[in-house]
Image (cartoon, rainbow, N blue to C red; front, side, top):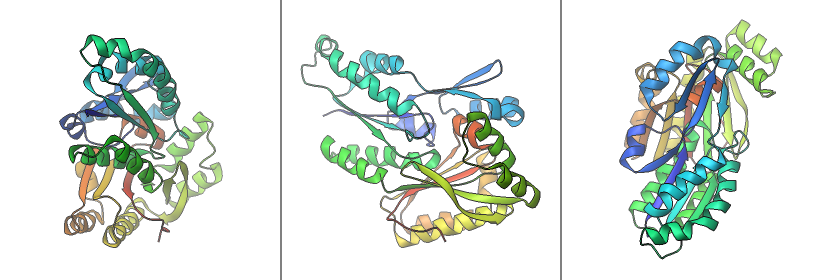
Length: 313
């Protein structure tokens, strides 16, 4: 059986890895004033757009999820011919319309694919499963990596589906935003009350940085520290201990809202990478998606992994 994998561009995985493993992309479009860019996970294009538009006006950006009609067209034009079963792995539905759009498209796809496949010489059924990763940023990268690993190992589609749905409930993302004032402006523009005005004001005055957490689609702070680098060091140290305690997949994802070389100089990074190497954990590093940067700000860092239930400490 030919198994395909589709993700949206909010998923923080390197473009080179996506292309090498034939993982298809649903791009998210970002508009700031008269400027517009469809995010195809091109790191240089993302950084150029960020430097030109996001730093000063990013909090006013409008993002457009890949619409249901275009998802349907992508599947009927290509994917129902190229594959027999496709997993569409989306950013958490609590933060984006992509999951609902893909679900709506799936009904039309499954109703219309038969004559298209027949003309291509395929008379077997086509199947599609849309899975909510329940994650954001680097946390969203865990499921596609595991899906590719299982597909390449010859796992059957029902077994892959069961594993991905299990991992969605055990995936974690942690983030340190660099500029809490930007994050407050962005959430206010979106009508999101996730970061209170008082917290943003105090945070800016005292240089307090929260460590934020996403699990099963829910987000919130788990710690607050004075200074960006101390918060990063705390987060890297925590991730190192989780790696040493054992992860549910041999995967850890890192994304950074800027040049990756700047991330690699942050305190605690080298110890985390060393722990991953010692425990055979593959590390995926990438520039944060354009969608991510306009929502949480330039210079923010996120970590994603799958693990048993735990408390941040």
